[in-house]
Length: 307
Figure 1 (spheres, rainbow, N blue to C red):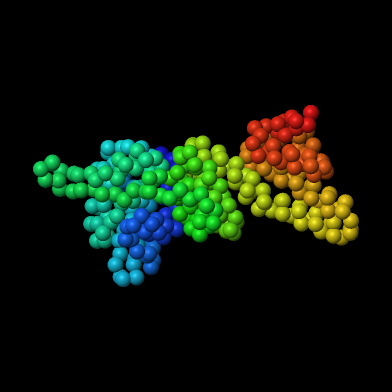
Figure 2 (cartoon, rainbow, N blue to C red; figure 1 turned 90 degrees about the horizontal axis):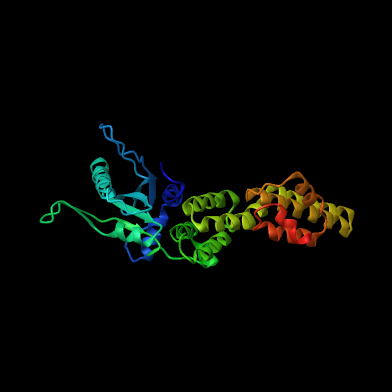
């Protein structure tokens, strides 16, 4: 079964195939920006009952009229059997499409990347018939983007950076930069990269950091409920012409933010706790509860210091 992190590694290339050329240009490899990119079928099965399937297959058409194929594979660990599979993929693609194929392998750790990057010679030592040379992206050559401004300039590359550096000690900085950059996008576009990033981080510690960031930085700010309640609060305050109306609306919106944040983090909220939050109108108390809701593991932890 294909893992979620495995799937996300190639989805980023489907969302923005140009990230391939941009990344390798930064590494000094002369891949040109494509004029057009097409997503091709990934099924390489022949008549024989042996299924062979790539993660992603893209056709790059250059402005010069030349074309090549990019086969993307995500690799989580060393696998000696992969060399035979990769050689088959490239030979089959060349025979089928009559276009030069390139194999891109994306890794999340340096040991796997170093193994995948080493040329694999197929044939007797005296006369290797084939030499397999994948292009490899991993934490050793994908830049660690920790500056929000730089992340905003190329969000697909920043997303790839977050996924390939998910096991690094500085992963939190990369994730915060990406979270900040995503605020520059519309909600529908941002949600694509939010999902890809979470899938790509898999079961790493950074995955929980990402979920917490999204719960705080994006989800509740962009929720229709929160925006509607804040708008109602402002409208009510304006119509009645006094501060009580504004404070009432703001407190109600803040309470809903807390409940939404707990819901997005998967925290069960008993009816009694839900009622206590929803009816509270003290903004300082609500502010304290919201801060605790970011890291709380139960609804009771919100009120622990108030007891």
